[in-house]
Length: 102
Figure 1 (spheres, rainbow, N blue to C red):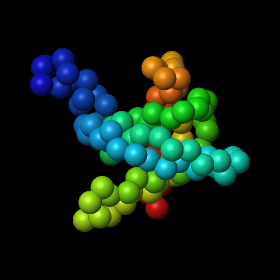
Figure 2: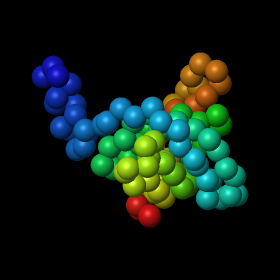
Figure 3: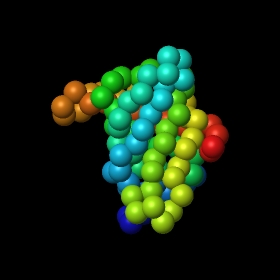
């Protein structure tokens, strides 16, 4: 890791782990179910790739199942804190803060 990359990671507070695994999303406001991808995970947040845009402040429950069943699944209540431009295929990447692990 370069010195500048290391400084950025330390400023962030948590290292990010690259994941790229399926995630099930439930939007708190209306109960809508979405299928997405957990792109990366840190101790305080996630980067999600979703088929629809959600604005900053939107709340959702994110569930990620263990691929092999050996590890427990992750389920957390999250809040959108960063919106990104659409990416290829009309999908959207959003940054969420983990409010509570369930």
